[in-house]
Image 1 (tube, rainbow, N blue to C red):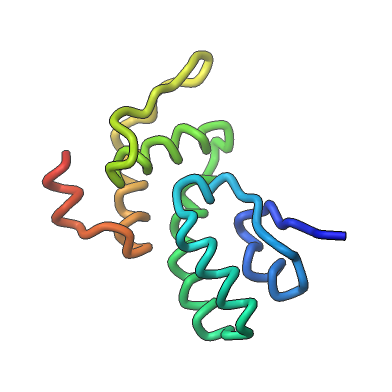
Image 2: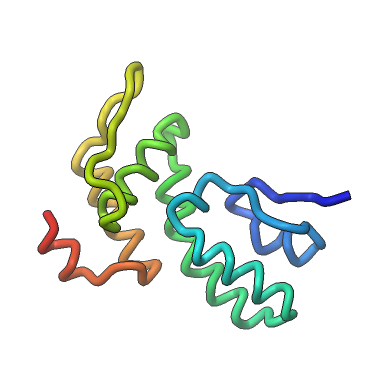
Length: 124
């Protein structure tokens, strides 16, 4: 039997306890970090896994912050900030994120070292 972990706050812990893989919504934004975390655990390189997990953490906090209902909107906006989507389309009853939320996502992307502060400011 294979067990896939889905709770983004516990990815590293789940993998170290024997989960066979990841199935997290945040993987649509940070698949490279998820793969790197998985591979570090497979190599039993806990130091590297912890370093990767520390990069994932600020994004997990930003994506899954209250209200939880906005998590997909946040991920779409993050993809826009990363230059992977042209626009973050939102369907009713959800509404577009306010600027302060997008700014918080920008800070999380910078903290995760996925973008440089200057590149985000230039894109705004």
